[in-house]
Structures are given as structure tokens and as C-alpha cells.
Length: 111
Image 1 (tube, helix red, strand yellow):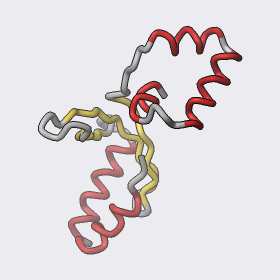
Image 2 (cartoon, one colour):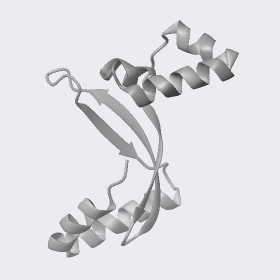
Image 3 (cartoon, one colour):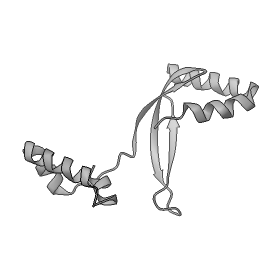
């Protein structure tokens, strides 16, 4: 939330939210005053793909220094996991259905 406030310091709705949270929570007020801004550069995301179903993938975010504000996301599946098997199945299916797979890839993206 701190990063968003920095991008648009005149956002009235965000200012109101911060004000409300600050009056209701000593803990929030302390954290907000610290100005400690961190982005989540890694984590886990779930995707629901129309062909293979649920994929649970770890991701890592890498900054693209030549284009400030842009990032490259790298997704991986835990070896031996159901998601790893589903990715293998999806790669095989995609090789057999190239036109359909490009359309489905756009539909299944969620962030």
C-alpha cells in the first residue's frame, strides 16, 4: 500500500483508508510511519488453466533495468508435483494444437 501511495500521493480514497487504519490500529500507524516499502519479488501463484486445470507455480520477479517499472516473471513448478506434470501435459498438448494454445494462453492468465 505504501508503494501505491507513492505512485499517486493525491489518491483521496487511499488517503482516507490510511487515515482510518491509522486511527484504529497502533500497529498499522507504527508500520506506516516507518516508510518501510518492500515489493514481493517471489512467491506462489495459482492459475486455473482451461486444458490442464489448476497450476500452482512458484515465481520470481526480476527487474528489467533497461525499462524502469517493467519486470520479468519466471514461473516454475515444484519437481514431481501435480503442477509439474500438468505443465508437461500442457507442453505436449500445445505442440499438437499450436493455434488453440495461443488463444487459451491469453484467456488463462491471471495475476
